[in-house]
Length: 371
Image (cartoon, rainbow, N blue to C red; front, side):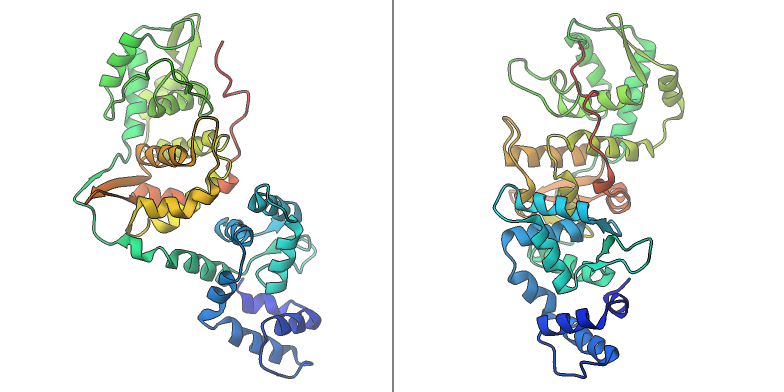
């Protein structure tokens, strides 16, 4: 519902409080209709949202991002307090104060029916206005035309998953003691892919981004983990084979599998990057319908990135962007020594149709390295 509708369910005392908060023009304090009309005149001013956001602290802004960019229709108090804790990120303050302030501003409203009385809602037009205000400052970094050269891997990950399963169907694949495909055979497998990778060099620490991440390069480790999770492949007594479900996928794999791969990636990467949902929401807002500089995207999402072991904020960001290209969610372009990014047709559908906030972190037991 829009804010005009929400105000009709609010008691006259709360309307008076909102009236005083926004310094509205004097009107009949006993007329609910007059109070609502006066509030809407003030709220509908172009400078309304901009002025309120300008007066917010960094932690308040993070809380507003969390409730505005999460498309959930309603929140429980526990969910709002969890967002408050995420906004504080270890800084001093009380999560409840953010909720109180949002209620005071009329950005959140408690439910009015028996079923919704313990839920809190953000008016749809308020959400849209705040999102527009967030995006407004990044418009100078956008461009409507494609860079002179760009990379587009849309649907290629699905096709390489099919190639992987067919390879297992046609060849005997032995595993090392660590349950890895032998290096020479692994190189042969990668050469059959549309998007080849180099095997990782041993010695450096690699952990936290999946079950087989320590053994394989980023893209293939995601493909392997997805195939294993969906029971398309089986590790059995030193051999890697394809299951009956995998054989079925060999012959009937559809492009729509890419959507499931994308959802699986979110679940897998939420463990090392807990705030991945809001990072993806920012990327989705900034990267459509135009191209935007990658440096501007980093500026928007960097407050939500925290170092993870040997990974820095920048290296985590690079991993996210790299995987979005591999998953066919976005295109990566370069021009005049500047990198640019935009969404593919799949990316538009998935990013605006799947809420990463609703995707649960992958089960801890799954990511344990095989013995």
